[in-house]
Length: 308
Image 1 (cartoon, helix red, strand yellow):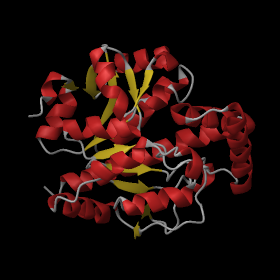
Image 2 (image 1 turned 180 degrees about the vertical axis):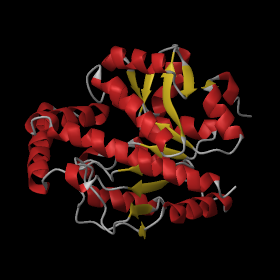
Image 3 (image 1 turned 90 degrees about the vertical axis):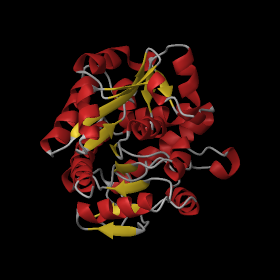
């Protein structure tokens, strides 16, 4: 028998919204602790919450604080995470039991944000990009836990596609095997985080948010477990030049290989290196795409809540 209440704290505003069937959007916390420096990280996190509110939903930033799973953070808690930075453990599924047991702080990845969202009853989650199959995975077996979570946890993830540092083709093959729909928001082509194009198609294109809300309800009403990837392209004016970003990615991947960086350390290293190689342009694009995803996520959450 599950004993969720023993470990989970749901913010009063978020709890009330869930009980009343109002739209709620989950937000991850690694972008606060590991995504950018203080105070920019806190400013960005609070702005993302403001974007969710402006589009008709309640934000619920997810984290683990002092061993407690948190669905919805206060401004002070976001400030605390921002100042603590990389001293906070980057938490995925395997880490949650030990962070609880040791009463540690954890910044949630896509996988752990999905888990805590599902425990709290939140069905929609906005992030930047999801993890996937890393380049060279045919020999390293480096595959993000995000993909297994998408296969098993009933949460829709609104993102700017899969991170362009990954092997996008293999990631899509993996998602197909696991039965995870990849949906394009007003696009036939899967966006690749910093750019609107990847050379790969989505499974389904939607023109209106209600279309995917109906699909979410049908899937979960039928007991078909697992989430959705809802790929929302970065706004055109903020996307990076396709060849510029790919050249930076290739250089960063090569350096990571030479230095033997792998596993959970690879993504932060690659994103940091790409930021340096692009003169900070990639970080600016990252922030804009997160705001854009929060806006679409709020609209989807609103449509889903109205289906009852």
